[in-house]
Amino acid sequence: MAAAVALVALVVLLLQQQHCAIGQQVPGYFIFGDSLVDNGNNNQLQSLARADYMPYGIDFPGGPSGRFSNGLTTVDVIAEQLGFDDYIPPYVTASGQDVLGGVNYASAAAGIREETGRQLGGRISFSGQVRNYQNTVRQIVDILGSEDAAADHLGKCIYSIGLGSNDYLNNYFMPQFYNTGSQFTPEQYASDLIRRYTQQLQIMYNYGARKFVLIGVGQIGCSPSELAQGSPDGRTCVQRINAANTIFNNKLRSLVAQFNRNTPDAKFIYINAYGIFQDLINSPARFGFRVTNAGCCGVGRNNACRNRNEYLFWDAFHPTEAANVVVGRRSYRAASPSDAYPYDIRRLALA
Image (cartoon, rainbow, N blue to C red):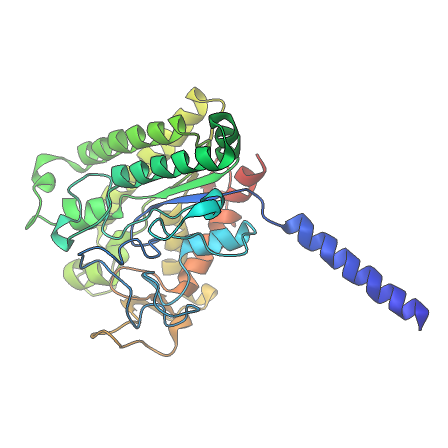
């Protein structure tokens, strides 16, 4: 009996040690992005781009939160993988010591360009999100007592940036509201976006960021909205949109290489969300998906399908929690060499 008790105690001790070893891998996680990762920053804005009502959040603890999904977003999944006990709070509610653990600045309809998404109302552009981050840094300096202590803390945190989708969906490919489609070729437009993106990364670097995750644009031409508008059969992805997204992604990946060469005290990685999503579209059954060309969330504010895990898309633009789990986990731990460059978030956390 005594031996059995001792064995149980040893197993408990080993499990506790294992839990500590897994633990929280970085002191903070700062998130910049659009509706794919917004978790409530648009809730107080005069905007059509809001998700603080049912059926959004139908599978999220506590119900609708402002997340454009039935449940978790990709960054929620990444936060889990990084060992955080809770999800990163939105900027509008983050306060006090909480900001040390990270802040989510993402805003639905936001873009790299200032005017992107304006037809939807209020939103916080990439530059506005970076200004909010600068405010947070000033708070962290006050909390930790010095700029040196703040710089040491921030240098160990992870920063993920996922923007660009709206610069195509709610700008370049929306000629009724914007003239960028006639002003720029896809190549020129991608270059303009990367130039603006680079300026914001430089500001973040100047304010202590050192571990950057640049997340590529997904296959926008395969979203239910674009399939309904531009696909000949309702299933074939809209190639002109995906081709433009690919140009941007290639430039973003090159930007990672450029920053890694020129800023040796910082580390940049690229997450190939486009390629990961391509796997889900090309081999849906392998991941448990049955429907890839329609949203689970139907017409009306309260409609939602029952078999949500079988749908790739939650609504006309945004993935379901089930899809976000795949993308988030593969961003953290690459399942294919093409998922991340030069390595995944797990290795960045250890770097």
